[in-house]
Length: 92
Image (cartoon, rainbow, N blue to C red):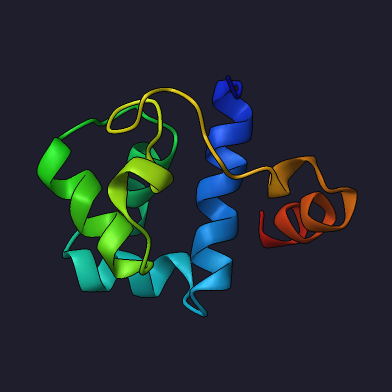
């Protein structure tokens, strides 16, 4: 099971891979950038909004939010790849 920090990094990677910025995802979903950040960090947890965020990134909700919609086991191992982590840090 991935740690909370790894799940957050994975969500940021999904946004980056979608070719969108966090600002653009927030616009698509209809929330502020701060609200999007709160969802990415699991401070806010409305399931409908979580699904909208995942769809805005072209990712299934159970992959984007494994701790809420999946079985708790993520198939995404890209956060363990040092190259991907460097890219994720650059997004921050």
